[in-house]
Every structure is written in C-alpha cells, then in structure tokens.
Length: 212
Image 1 (tube, rainbow, N blue to C red):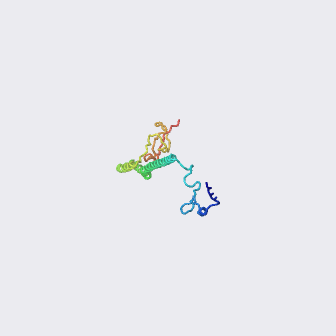
Image 2: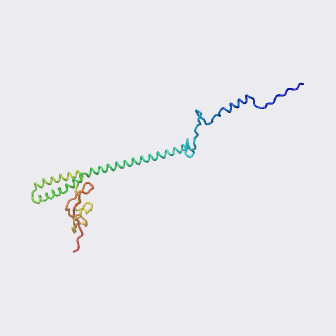
C-alpha cells in the first residue's frame, strides 16, 4: 500500500476571508431607533402619551359622573323655573293691587269736599230750602256711587263696637243705654277702599258712667 500524502496545515485566514472581514467592518451597523431619513426617533418620556393608570376611568365611572351632572343640571333648571313662576305670580298680584288702589289718592282728596257738601245740605234743609236741598242730595248721591264703583265706601260706625283699625275715638261719653266701647256718635265719616282705610271715622265712644 502506498502512503497518502499529508495535507498542509492552515496557518491563517485566506485572502478572501480577510477581504470579507474588512468590508464588514467598514459597513455601519443599522440603528434600531432610526426612523425615516436615518434620524433617531424620539422616545416618549414618562408621564407623556396616554393617561396613566391612576387617571384612567372605567365606563361605569364615566357614566356615573355624567348622571350626576345631568341630575344637577335638571335640579337647577327646575329651581329656576319655580323661581320664575313665583316672580310672575308676585308681579301679577302687585299689578292687580296697583290697579285696584290706583284711585286711592284721588278719592282721599275728594273726601273733604264731600263732607262740605253734606254740611251745606244739612244747613239748607234746616233753613227750609227744600228745592235746592233735593238737587244737592242728588249730586252727593252720584259722587258716592262713582266712588263705590272704584271700591270706595263709607265705614260703618254708629252703633258698632269701637274698632281701632277703623275708628278714631275723639271723646268718651258715659252711657247707660249702650255697652262700654260702643260708638254712640259719628263726628266725621270715615271711608275705606276695599280692605284699606282711606280715612278713619272720628267717633264718640260710650263709657261706664261714674257713680254719683
């Protein structure tokens, strides 16, 4: 048998291997964070971007919050509507009262002339001028009817119990025929417009007679 020729041992890299290594070193490694154009993409900082775990709300929490806001807005709307309705009611009442008592000042100014007319009628009646008295009686009646159309009427006094809201006691008169505190004389007629007093009646009130 012939002996095989031994292969030469490899001492170092071949020329082709050296060339491949030099090309690999000259080629830059790709940047994992590079974007388009080779520039690095900015990294997001902590706290930026979407909501954190503490800021995130579930669907049920958001629904509850919206329901509470809706209830608050509804309550405010109802309260505002009730306040406006009360304002309208007060304004209407005030307007009605103003119309009802609008003639109060004029009626009050006419009371003294009506009193003077009544005194003149009584004087003429006492003198026997019945023709003139009848005409003045008619005028006085018409004036009182006009005032009554606007709610102005005389205040009852004679024979009624004394009422400090309606009567002005000028003097006390001892009387055995009337109960104490009864109006026994009307010195000046009083008038009222509906439930308001234009002028109180000036009256004399009965008192208990003193023992002799």
